[in-house]
Image (cartoon, rainbow, N blue to C red; front, side, top):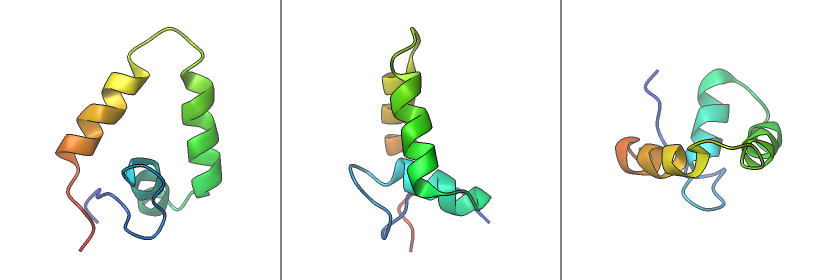
Length: 59
């Protein structure tokens, strides 16, 4: 299975939804982990933007 952005579990771009669907995780958990990770120093938002550009839309 190829990592792709979700069409159904989409809030902004579907990146967290696509990651959750690909690995069989809960979408809310992935989103919560991402938001909490943004409180730590690092390139989390930049990584999200890169994934938004690189990950294809789910067909």
